[in-house]
Length: 75
Image (cartoon, rainbow, N blue to C red; front, side, top):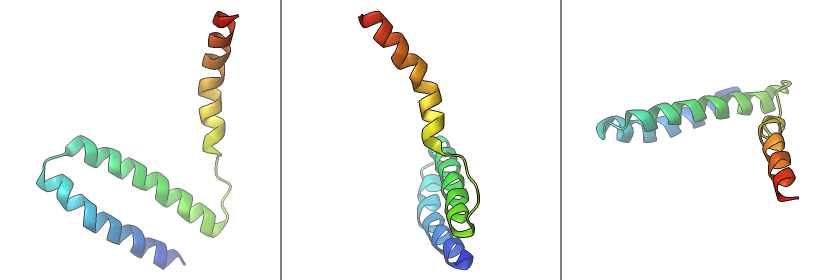
C-alpha cells in the first residue's frame, strides 16, 4: 500500500510541478509542496495507523477566542 501511495503522489507531482516551474510560479510551488507534504503525512498515517493530531482541534484553538470576543461584543 505504501508503494501505491508513493506512486500516486509521484504522478500528481510529475503532472503539476512542471507547470509551476515553467510559469515561474515559485510561491505557488512552495504552497503546493507544503500541502503535498501534509497530504502525504496524513495518508501514510492512515495506512500505518499513526497517531496524528486532529486538524480540527487546531482550528478550534485559533477561532474559539475570536468567536467568544465577537459574541461578547454583540451582547
